[in-house]
Every structure is written in structure tokens, then in C-alpha cells.
Length: 583
Image (cartoon, rainbow, N blue to C red; front, top):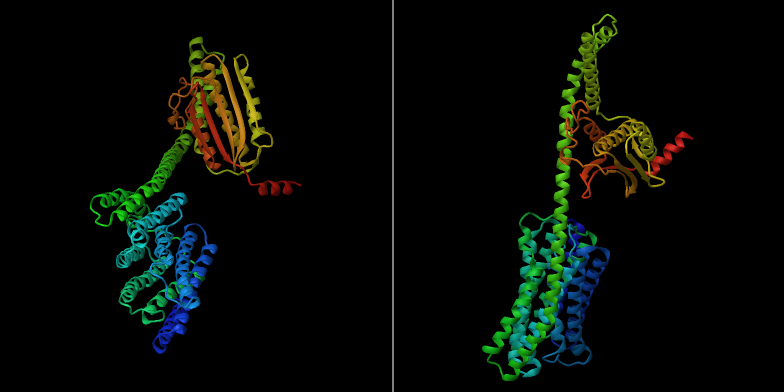
């Protein structure tokens, strides 16, 4: 721990020693009572103030942690302030029982909820509503315990001995629970949060032991304000104040927790569930085995029924929120699975294209040289006028097959040449219009209609205009071939901006795609032999990937195929820079 952090703990030790010296050297009297009461009240108020300040300077669950810790210290200060009010201002002993007992009893509850928030966890998921509801359930439960166990002996059928015994037992259980939760916190985390939990654990362990000793001294008539029994209380308060000050100077951040530590720390929902399940058991005990006076038993049964009416709606609301959280997690899981599948498919497709590209590049070059000779000599022979009709037919077939093979080799070379190309700002709207105009010749005499709907002022993309143009032509020609098979139809081309991307959709009314998941595989084609090589869409896929975009296809329920291209739009700053360079 850095030296600057040590100074707060040294100051806390110095204040504790000074208080102990005053307690040893002073005689029991009003002056000592006032000194002790006001010192303790001021320290508790200071701790609450620093923690609330920490809450304002942080965010999320860390802010909630410090707010709840500060609320606990504030309740503690209110209880101590009531004690000082009686002893310092009224100059008389604090009545037993007192309204301050309820405040003192409730002050650990926000602290328990604070640690149960798990502020050390990385903020991957926010469940603020559930955490708030769990805290309210715990708060109502502790109030129910007080009303069930202590309140009857305080107001219904007063019994000082039973009241002191039950209050002390319940308050001790509450302190032990806080210590246990902090122990779990120390075991669950490391680094900054571990130091915070460890310091708070030490402070509250001292307080849990000393408060029990002080209660025994009160019962025996040996306690007075400013006695040595108050030294551990001052020590505990100073320790908490120093911890909050250190956290203020070096704010802790959420840390990733180790695998398996989550099972140690789902305390808030478990405590909330315990609050709900304990009501029937305690009501049954009050009805069958409670040996207290009838008025006490009836009051306890009434408290159980009232608590059921209060906690019942909380339970239903908690289940509703948990169901919503579960549905959210299921939706996220489904989307994550779909994204994983999509990414895996893209990677597999990319590997296919890369490996096949290296293969066909070498093969195409080797085939191209003899093919050029075959085509050249066969065309020379075909032009010879002294060929018989049978010879002329055979040479014509050789030329046709050689030209077909040349086209195939050209496609192979184009496919293998899928390497990063030079890119500039491109207007996709104009490229789409050019591609549509280029295919008009092939539509003559066919019942095929192409409709375009381009959003005005489409953002530009950074790409290779020629490659994107060829990709659009390839998709349009494939759609026209599919529409020609069914005697005609329409192709709708739409383009629009979507967030930071530009989307282009080609939707036809043809027969659809037989196997959409294979449409981008190399050499996959459904066209008749001689009409396609199965490399066009594979090359298009490679072009879109090279432009850091995505291309997908699917069949529409009403019939027809849909190809969707998504390309990242160029940043406005890049567009302005390009226009300035042209000027």
C-alpha cells in the first residue's frame, strides 16, 4: 500500500489512542459523557459524508455500494445522535427501550445490501431493478424480524429482561451476517476491492465483538459513555472512515472475477429468497409452539400476515423481473449463436476462396498457353476454304469448345486475382444505375422488369468501382437467368443508409435458390452445362469481403431470392478531404 494511503490509517490509530487516553485519565461524569457522545457522533457523520461523496464521484454499482454504506453510517449516526441528545442536552440516561434502538438495529441492513451488490464485478450486465428489489426485500425482512421478535416485548407486553435478551441476540446475528458477507467478499476478489473488503471486515469484526461486550456491561450496570467499552467503537468508526478516504483518493474499479467465485457471492437473491420462505415457518412456530402470553402470540401472527401481504407483491414482482431478465439473456444467447454461426460461415468461405485461388491461378496459366495455340490454329483451319462440310462442322465445334474453355480460364484468372485493390470514394447509386442500363440489351424480348428504389443522397463508400460494378452486374444477370426460367418476373433493387453502413438489396420474383447456404461456394451452379462456371458469385463474395462488407442471400416466403450487400460508408471527413483534393 502506498505511503499516502497509510497516513489515513495512522491518523485513525492516533484518534483511537487519543480517545483511549482521555477515557483512562478522565473521571466518569457529564464532561466525559459529552466528549464521548459528540466524538462518536462526529466520526460516524464524517464516515457517512465521505462515503456519500464517494457515491457521487462514481457510477453504477460502485456508486450504489458507497451510497448504501453511507446510508448505514448515517443511520448509525442518528442512533448515536439520539444517545447524545439525552445525555448531553437533557442530562439524563437514555430510556430503555428507546426509538433509537430501531434505528440502531436497521443500520447494518444497507451495509449488507451494499456488499451484496457485488460492486467489484465487471459491469457486463446491469440488473439495477433486481438489485433494488432484493435490497427492499431484505430491508422489509429485517423490519419484520424486529417486529416479530423484539417489538412484542417492547410495547405489547413489556418485559425488560426479555427485550434486552432478544434485541441483543438479533443484533448480534445481524452483525455476524455482515461479517460473514464481508468474509466472502475478501475470498472472492483481489487487489483494490480485496483491501476495501478486508478493512471493512476488520472494522466490523471489532465492532461485533465489542458491541456484545458493551451490551453485557449495560446489563451488568458497568457501562457509561466514554468508558473503555467505547474505545473499540471509536476504532471501528475511524477504520471505516480511513477506508472510505483511501478509496476516495484511489477509486477502485470493477475487476473480472475468477471462474467459480460467482457461486460464493449470489447473496442478495439468496437473502431475499430466505426472507420470503421464512414467513410461513415463523408463523407456524408462533401458532403452535410459542409459549409467550396470548397478546404476544396474536401480535406475532398479525405481523406474519401483514408481512405476507407486503412481501407477496414483492415476490411476484421479483419473479416477473427475473423472467424478463431470463428472456433478455435468451435473446442475447440466440443472437450470439447466430452471429457465431455467421462468422464461422464467413471464415470457412474465406478459407475456401483463398486456398482455391492459389490452386486455380497456377492451373489457369498452364492451360492458357496451349489453349491459345489450339484456338489460333483451329481458327486458321476454319478459315480455309477447301474444307469439306464434315470437316468444317468438326472445326467449328473445336473452335466453340476452345472459346468456351478460354472463357472458363478467364473466369478462373479473375477469381484467383482476388487481392486487395486500389480504392477510392465510390457512388454506389450511379454504379447500380450503370449496371441496370448495361443489362437492358439482355432483357429485350423477355418479360423481365427491373425496378430501382435508391435513397437520395446515399453516402459514398471507399472501394474499387470496377470490382463493385462487376459484382452488381453478376447478381443482376443471375437474377435475370432465374426469371427467364419461369417466363419472366421482376427484380427490385433498393439501396439505403443504415447507421454507419450502406445496404443494397436485390430481390427477384423467380423460383428462389435451391441451396442458399452453398450459393457462394466455388464451382457451385444450377445452370445448364455450358452456361455458367459457378465462380461468379464466389468472386463477388471475395470482392465484398475485400471491401470489409458482408453479402448474404435467402429465399423469400412468397417466392424469389434476395441478395443483401452491406458495405461500410465512408466517413464524412474522408469525403470532405477527397472533395478538397479535387478542388
